[in-house]
Image (cartoon, rainbow, N blue to C red; front, side, top):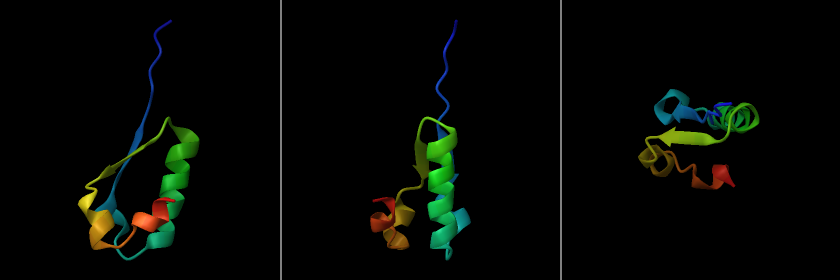
Length: 54
């Protein structure tokens, strides 16, 4: 009866220049896992994507 939580992760440099693909990836992570981890969050600032997480 062991339970595991799977949390998806995204490497943000893989989405540089493609905010729509980034948003699709976020949605997929949320739908298919128990959340999403973003690496490295500094790229949210570099790409001006903070509002895309809303």
